[in-house]
Image (spheres, rainbow, N blue to C red):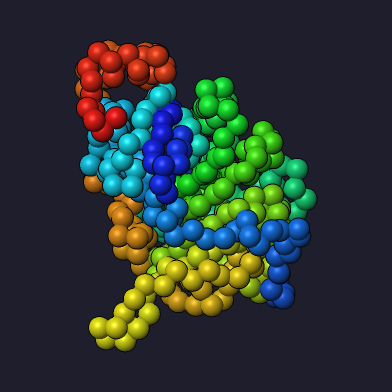
Amino acid sequence: MVAAGSTEYMGQRRWFILAIFVCLFTFSCGRELKVEHKHVDNHATAYNHTLATILVEYASAVYMSDLTQLFTWTCPRCSGLTAGFEIIELLVDVEHCLQDLNAVVIAFRGTQEHSIQNWIEDLYWKQLDIDYPGMADAMVHHGFYSAYHNTTIRPGVLNAVESARKYYGDLNIMVTGHSMGGAMAAFCGLDLVVNTEAKNVQVMTFGQPRVGNAAFASYYSQLVPNTIRVTNEHDIVPHLPPYYRYFPQKTYHHFSREVWVHNIGVGSLVYEVEEVCDGSGEDPTCSRSVAGNSITDHLVYFGVELMCETWRSCGIVMDSLAKEYGKMDVKGNIAFSRDSILRMKTDTNIGGDQM
C-alpha cells in the first residue's frame, strides 16, 4: 500500500509520510574483527527520544490489517502522536503482502507468522551466503536481501519516493521498521543513498536482527551514518543471527549506532534508561551485556505493541466502499491513485475532523 500524507511533529512542523507495510513469510579461531568508521559525523547519529516515540507508533500502526481503516487513518493505532496523518496514494500488493504509504517516513511491517517462535528459531541458522553488490568482502543473508530487493517492494518504494518529490519537492526521508521490517528498512535506506542519491536519509529501527558481516556493517555506517538501532531490555531478536567474536570472517555484525532501552534501579526505585552505545555496532556494555532471551521485550517498545492483533499469515480486510475507489489487477493487487483517494474523501467525508 502506498500513501502520502502529513502529520504534526514537534510543534507546527509538517511531515509527509511514506510507509511500507510488509507481511513476510519466514523464508577457525581468530581475533575479533573491528568495524572501521571513516569520515562519520558523530552529530549525524544523535539520538532523539521524541522522534523514536513517534516512529515506533508508525511501526505499530502498519501491523493493522483493516485496509479501510488504514485508508482513512482511523485504525485503533492511528492516533496519539500520529494523529492528523492524511493518505494521498495507496497501493496494496496482495501477492507479497505489501502495503505502503507514500511520503517521507517509510515504515516496514515485520514478520507475520503463525508462530513467532518458529521465525526466531530460524534466525539461529541463517548463514552469510551472498555478496552485497559493489561492496568488497561485504556479505549478507539472501533471505534478508531478497525480502527487499527481489519483490515488488523496491520498485514500489522508489516510485512512491519519486511521486512524493513531484508533489512536495526534495524532502528528507526517514525509514523505520520493527523486527524483520527493521532489516528491510536498513536495506531500503542503503538503497536510497547508493542508487537514488537521496539526501538526508535517516534510518531508525526497533528490535532489528543482524543482516550482514563486519565489512557490510562498515560500508553501511559510512554510507548511512544517520542510523539508530533501538533495542529493548532482553529482546532476543537483536542477538540473532548469532555474533561469534572468535570467527570474524564467518559471523554477523551489527552496524552502529545502538540505543539500548532498559530499566535500572533496585526495588521500587526503577527507571528507564536510553543508553547511547559506542560506534562499534557490537558494544559489549549494551544489549550484548545481557542474555537475549525475551520475546515479550521484542513485542513492546516504549509501551507500544509491535504485533498484529492475531498471529496469522498475511490478511487484508477491506469493505466494499474502499474497493469502489480502487483498481484491482488479475492477481488481486489493489491500487488507489491520489485523485481517487481525494475523491473518496470528498464524496464520503470519511474520517471527519481526523483527516
